[in-house]
Image 1 (cartoon, rainbow, N blue to C red):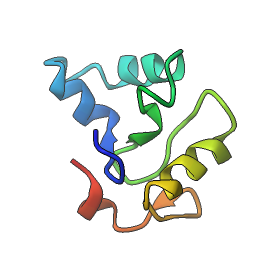
Image 2 (tube, one colour):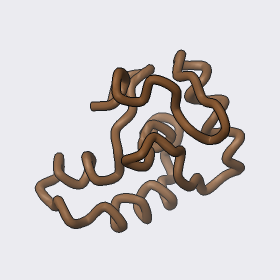
Image 3 (cartoon, rainbow, N blue to C red):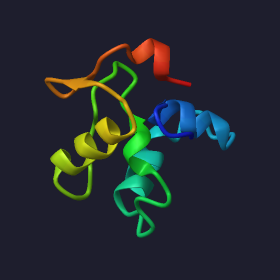
Length: 84
């Protein structure tokens, strides 16, 4: 996922041909030892909410904002425009 774009947990599950595995994707993102090189901060809920983050959620927000993603009240602004 390129900087400034996001994908949902379900969308990522579909990319790996496991469309029902959105919970497993969330669990894997939570345990990602390679962040931020493997950008788990770009994976969000299907309604544009940020979802969880293994570290402090404010770190996920800062990383997204650094990439130009606008976040307000735990939700991505213009979610449909920047999601894949």
